[in-house]
Image (cartoon, rainbow, N blue to C red; front, side, top):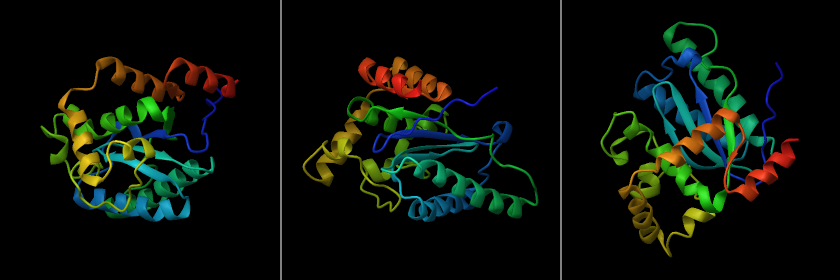
Length: 214
């Protein structure tokens, strides 16, 4: 069966998810998470993408990124997965792939859906019952986007920057978005878009992406 065509457009945000092989754990402790994020930092220099949000969970990772060169996201994930696999196999005395095949991704319409996608990503630990509040989870971008914690991995998207005139205003506005749960239909849309490796956005945006895919 032929693989679905992965669509990447210059400057359009891309929601990426990479799962562990057979949904097994691929991050067993803090050292694993730190090592993965360290590799992510170095790989972002090799394949320049702008990272807007992320979360490292026990058996999968979410990234929200954009790039001007459509080849960079794939190059980033290839280098990142290879480096982390070498480390993980060495540390735990194993062999074979850590990851469940190739990563999945979907395009995200910036103006209407970027902040919804960021919240979806950063709320993963809350939905999983690991923490009560997203700021309690160490391995995500929430504390940098909402609580003034420095994070060299991140490049704020213009939609995020328009939340306020300065850092304090933006982060207060961003925090306020988390006062209400994400609507169920938004969660359903995001998951369906990832599974189909298509896009999430309004009807005009989806039609445009469908035309490109043909």
